[in-house]
Length: 180
Image (cartoon, rainbow, N blue to C red; front, side, top):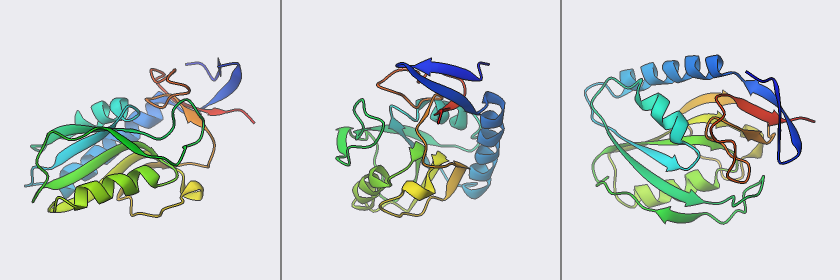
């Protein structure tokens, strides 16, 4: 695994290895299995960024469950959120009276989670929880409880493992941060 890479002419360094990520995903899966035992939650991935984390996490889930996806837009090709969250793909499932678990790649400003939470809560779910691989506590503009956090990270720009830079490098097996 490369410890340094260059993307769009900018240097990035390894932040979270593939092994460390997979160990944490297994831990999150075990916790979710315990917390939702006897229930049939709907795991909802937020596209595009969460797709790799979502796939790895759902393979760790041993309880009965359903899956669906939202697609939002708030970044475009920029390194920071535009602050304008738009729904590009809505759900195909019925959430009323159901246990909902949102699966995010990263929570930074909190704008996307706030947007999703408002949409979901209008439909009266039985419960609502969020699991995220990465959490940037210092970047939060709209606080919201995040029940399952993979890694708390600084407010640095990160890529890989589903996270992109101008739609590129989602396929990296690890997470890299912009070198300072």
